[in-house]
Length: 347
View 1: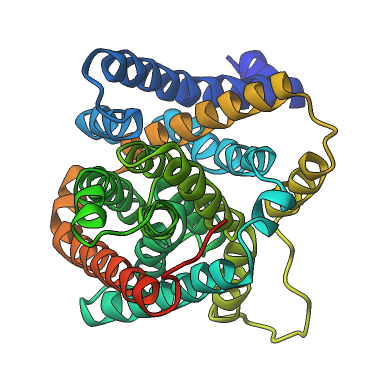
View 2: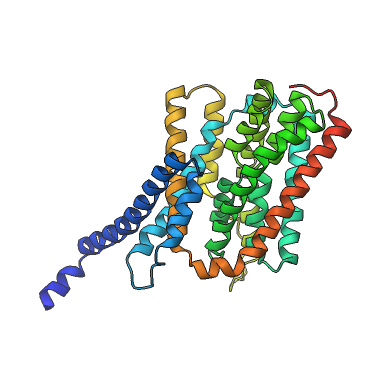
């Protein structure tokens, strides 16, 4: 017995134990992800919503389980890798093609939505971090933004806010994909106006493109480019929020030091630059996009497993209030701006 305890205390044995613990949680997240992808292909329901639901249906691991180690790896490191790889889907020329007026509209609406959404969340009784996750999901790019912003905020941030934000923005995006083209036709928006409306106000990329397809190819192209500008804002917004919220953390010795730059955001910016100068073949970009989606699905599955369904139900109403209110304000603001400033715009 003493010999066995001595062997288990060696560095090699500890490394093996840690590896097994990592694989235990990763395997669980992988199984949940595969089930979600399979059901998504059968039903057409967004895969992120399905992996969340499946994860929530499982028993939340207790403190004595080994699974939380791998689940934490999936919901943190693998998540950040997936966000970084999104940089290969954006080029600076796509952003420049928008023109100054459209870019100003998108950036202004993004900042205003973040500020108003955060304030609504505070009024609803959410913690500042939770309110910012919900506001960022609406302002930038839905589930990816919720995950990325949560990853740079203090570790005390609740996973249930991320789960609710993903479910909420996916539901709202799907509703907007159906309703917004009807609104665009009723208000007689031209193709470019409709594309700006969809790209600047719908949360998820797939639903943005789907809404544009209801109108015309020109509306689809315009909406995709406008949406890419919002996605490109993910890196600077996450960096700024990480710095701001790090200043709020109580520190015992108050020493002046620069905040640590999140490496995954730096990689995001580097990949945007590399992709902009045309060094990445289309096959590599496609593979990177698929790998990014795999990372995000694994991360969402892990978050779902880690989240207690009882905590989720207790805070669901407040998060959905923030998401719905910010969505309505963002869509209304974009429409008002289009009528005031974009009557004859073109891209």
